[in-house]
Amino acid sequence: MVILENLVTERRNEATEGLDQIPVAEALKLMNAEDKKVAFSVEKCLPQIESVIKLVVNTFQQKGRLIYIGAGTSGRLGVLDAAECIPTFGVSPDMVVGVIAGGKAAMTVAIEGAEDNVTLGRQDLKALSLTANDVVIGIAASGRTPYVIGGLDYANEVGAQTASISCNLASDVAKHADVSIEVDCGPEFLTGSTRLKAGTAQKLILNMISTLSMIGVGKVYNNLMVDVKATNEKLVERSKLIIMEATGVDYKGAELMFNASNHDVKLAIVMIFTGLAKKEAEEKLEAANGFVRHAIN
Image (cartoon, rainbow, N blue to C red; front, top):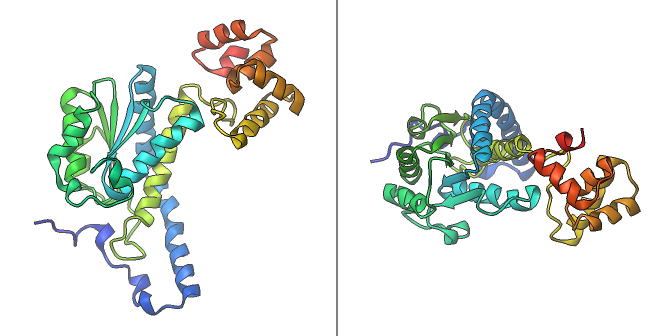
């Protein structure tokens, strides 16, 4: 039997008693006040988040993968963060992977019972051919999801680095991870609805992990996403703007080098700063392990 009453994420919020009778304007203020607490709660976890980022950067440097595993909202957030890394940082789909209990169908429809299956978590990671070079981050708002625990146990068995993100202190998943992030946002605005504050906290943490890890392997120059892939008209124009911001050239100059680099923003920037042709700039960038700052100095 699962005892939920001891979990902060399942407790009733005294501030929202009588919620169904509160006028919308007042309810909005209450909800906004609860949401404001999230960032401060995450702030308390920054040392643990830093430790996880160091694990991920080391994994990327060893050509390993970052794999998120979760169920329900937690799993969807992991899949979302993984998917967004592809266009933002120009990485392959297998560099950051999101695994959700119940598979792709669970992104839009709840798959009953999937999160309670310890074996399924192991099987899903086995299907990815998990290795000791990878890092697995288990995401579970409750901190007790069997599917996630099963995945973390398997990851530990194969020698992969492991971390957990939960929204309850002294969580079960923390016992199965090398590094644990436990953020306490207090009871939810709507009792037990962990897609609210818990989900927001998880999203903030995942943003931190993926973004700062990508910075750690050269995917950013200054504060610009120089590995962005121009897959649509908006991103084509954003790419040119990034080149302009990074180098100080005008729009025509940015467009010229964007085309000359075969739509490679990072390469265009190096070509502009160094005056080198495409091939030579590619070699210089490769020698700098993809770091623009190192390639132009």
